[in-house]
Amino acid sequence: MTTFTPTTAAEVLDAVRWAAAEEQPLEILGCGTKRGIGRPAQTEHAVDLSGLTGVTLYEPEELVLSARAGTPLAEIEALLAARGQEFAFEPMDYAPLLTGKTSSDGKSGTVGGALAANLSGPRRLKAGAARDHILGVHAVSGRGEAFKAGGRVVKNVTGYDLSKAMAGSWGTLAVVTDLTFKVLPRAETETTVALRRLDDEKAVAAMAAALASSAEVSAAAHLPELVAARVAGGTLGSDPATLLRVDGFGPSVAYRVAMLSDLFGGHVETIDTERSRALWVGVRDVAPFADGTDRPVWRISLAPSEGWKLVAALRMQLAVDAFYDWQGGLVWLRLEDDPEAELVRRLVRRLGGGHATLVRAAAPVRAAIPVFEPQHGALGALSARLKSEFDPRGILNPGRMATV
Image (tube, rainbow, N blue to C red):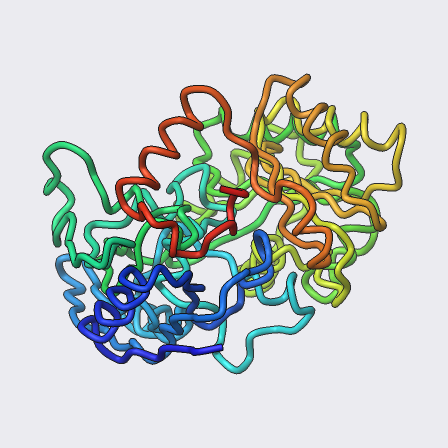
């Protein structure tokens, strides 16, 4: 196997041009923290972008940052934190879930991988995902052609926004070499309001009430019985915990926490800033299921009112561990051995539709079933046309997202 390790955009272009000319498939990767998502690579060659690093522009006053695709997210987040800023989309770190290990070595993924996987975290309800914060990219298509899209300001796009097309493409359309993101000020403080011992249905109703209030909740999650004990070092205990995060300036946070307490009749616990931040990192990075195994884990997005119904229906037939983010609209499921793909997706369709992605499973399992939500009809045709325009020879991460 030949692995190209470019350190410049020109070297990336040379590698892809060679592959296009020789019709040789390439695996595209950064640090490899998300390599276990999708179908296993069936390629003899790879482009490793981990050497294509460096922040090339940072203007805190303009809230804009540019970096090369292989730059570690941990490095960028540290730089932003030093100036009181952050990526507001709160990108999750898949490494603990997929490897069972924390990213203490700084290998928490790259900024290019954040866009390729369209990462987001608990704040998605309020701030969106990576695609909502990307301003511009430089990339190399599967044709071996360099192109750029977007720029350094928000209002810079006329026609199709190709920067956003890269979000969630998992390296199947182009090799992104440089990215520009907008950044935002980090909240001065935060408090988490916790409701205890609610069942899943009542928890979803409580989260909906909190989000509908004027308390400006930035994240809402529910950890059922026993699952709660697997985050923040077990400090929550094992009873179910419904979590509502309030962040911003200190006096405003205190006022809004009091508002939530009144909303729920004073039957709440409050969690201070330090513990709150650790807690939401655990929710973001799926700590309850980061057990070092390859037991199947599903990431399912559907209407917030339907998530608990999906879990209830599955529990009638299977042993299921689950918890909820995004007000109940993001369901994380862990099964014992068989991913039960047909059953899971049939129930999702029955509950109004959504997206079910098999995030973790053994390689033979991932090779045998559709890992990403299958696309049919007009959407499938549009995706196929997009792929044929960017990568007509199918050399970039072939088969990772689909069999064709």
